[in-house]
Length: 483
Image (cartoon, rainbow, N blue to C red):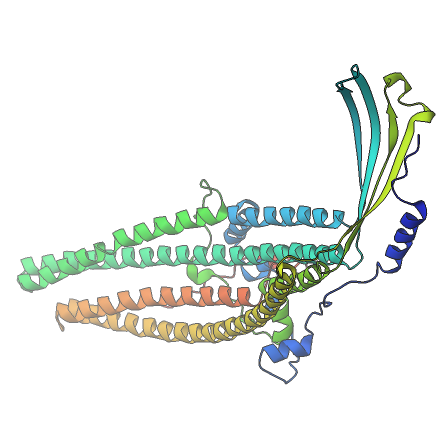
């Protein structure tokens, strides 16, 4: 028995009509800002030409050449929990895109059914059905296509967020490693200073016993020794915290974070200046993420606008029905149905139009946020370039100061042992040298951290795929200050 729910010609006509207008997609088409628009956001109209290849074009292994640091970064990229969460979000976004794309296609379902029914005036009767069901929402006004565009943009934005996390993680591991090296250098300076002051204390006791100096000068030497010892415990605590933080970033509590070259042997890359800021900033993951979020918000306008218009769906079923399971698959029991559903919103108290206005505002906000992110990126690059230069100047000044204080200490020590000057002059020279050497280690840390921040601001490292020459990764010879 054939069942026809709607006139066949009406259904076929609706299908043809839907195919004729299927190219209609409501809402604005997103157009990514070009080079000139990006320069406008950056506040400049002049073209920015590239003069030479910047170090930001190089992979992170070429920037962070300490082999132990490279090993830590590789472990972090594999094990860090925040990065793994970000990567999982990408997989979830990929699944959401598949869900969104599925609306573009028909759905097919199979449903075998058994029923037993007894009426008031009839005996129990069995009913068997074996049917397939078909449903397809005709995308007349592009709602599903716009939703698919939005889902794809969301996926790409999530991917860029994962790239940004990776970029940040590399910088965090490098920075924490350098901080650990600086603390170790501070401990070494302190232990060397303590040894010098203990030797001076032994000499002061001998001279006191010989009546050369007073008890006051001996006590002053003792104070210098004890004050140096007092600085060791806080440094050991800082060293412990730096190691545990580094293990947290690496994602492994058992990782041996000790090792590597000392802080003065770490290589600094000089040519980090960006020669084409617009292009360098455009590829930053956070800039790309903001761009894709803007694209997604723009696509959502089309989805909201399509809600103002009718929705058409084709439905159908094909199968067999029988009161006897043995006759279920016989040709005479085939039934089918083809239907057309039309849904037209008439009154919902302005809900759909308000939703459209909200989506338009969200897209406007996303566009403004993109401009803000671009400006923030430019600010970071500008600030970090200046900070990198300032840190280099500061290091050179501190190095000159160490040279001078070392000579001052040598002369004061010589004069004291020859009885020409008092212990006060010697202790003053010791204190100045101790402070200058510690300041030099801090200045070196500032240089390395500034290089790391600038390299990160330029989006260096995460996208690089060029093989690195292993010979170039070997640490340079330690920079030794003349004593």
